Image 1 (cartoon, rainbow, N blue to C red):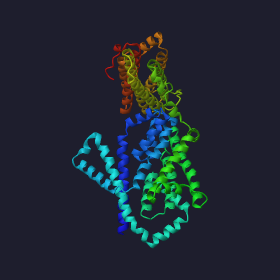
Image 2 (image 1 turned 180 degrees about the vertical axis):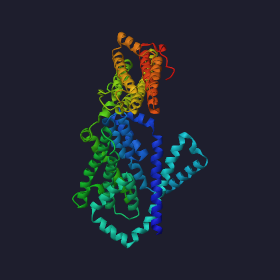
Image 3 (image 1 turned 90 degrees about the horizontal axis):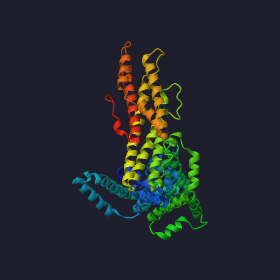
Image 4 (image 1 turned 135 degrees about the horizontal axis):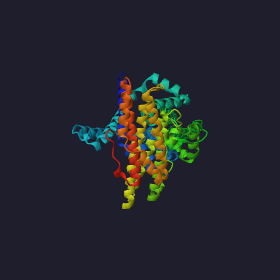
Length: 541
């Protein structure tokens, strides 16, 4: 019983350590890390190096995969550019597996002592150090758990029932492969399964051959786990999941036949190589894990274009992703500041043209290119990418005149985001009023408001795109202060019979949002034409 208690306690500490490392490193790699990815993935070599380092730090290829997915779905990069990082992150996860093969018990105790002292004296409360010490504590618990597993598992090799089971298991490499894959799917980490396998072979519970097959199976299992975790995604997000499992599968398909041939004495292979490099079996198995990841990454790099094409066929981009991707922005444009500004303005004009489409959702004959929620989310994403692009442009040390222009375009971008949000709220408010009978005064009012707003936004879109003086003049006339008119309409509706609380709320909210959209549209045009001082927020907005 004592044996299993030690193993269970060690496994518990190991899993807590893994969880602490993952959660704290995830906090350390927040928005700035996604920004770093966006910049690093402009260069293939830099992307691969970042993947290698981030895999070593986080010890989770799945974490890097999903960070990459968030970067791509946010439009900051694309699948081809993040692919080297995703591929080479697998190699980085070898660090912990190699460390598990070395006796670092004294270093682990020292690490736990240092982190314990830091926690006692509240050093961890410093914002910059909190997650660092949390990750270090997780690392110490992880290795302490491995030591307990080693201590508890050592007597198992003397038990006759265990020897009989291992003799049976050694006769079937298929069983070992399936066990490795299944454990990795459950644990969502091939490194975690491989570390435990290294611990088991180190105390003689598993043979080297069994452990190698388990490690190979675990590599494929972790790819399958990533794919399963991305099952709720679609389009390019799921493409990266397919890419990860394909890279893992390539490594398995390359090394498994070599190991099988070596096992039957047909040719020297994996075991011969690692035996020549290391004397102890634990290090040999750790080197097999490293070799597997390097081969997978190498083949993934060679066949990257084909793998991406296959992933795109299996999970083609969705309309939401297409709408959320900028049409004119690209990193190289930052080298020419004036051209970059022109491209942002083109992108903003394209977003402005979507506003009538959002209002189409509450018009009887409205024909939008997508559902309003999709348009709003995609347009918001593009507007935020415009803002990040403008921030990069400011970082490029523009002249004073260009800086003034950039600030003006940034201001318009803020107004555009507010317009998108107001259009979303207007549609939701009108929709909440529900279908109205033909003789309903509130229904007729909402119909007029919808049609008027749609027409004004169409005029505004044309004026923003062409910048024609006549169009701008018409737009300023259409978006003049309507507060008195809206108040009159509210009173007229309220005077007609009993008005329910829901109708009252819909009336007030829809007319207020109508005013706000007109004001924001007028302000956008004013900033564009240098007449911002002429605009004022209506009193009831």
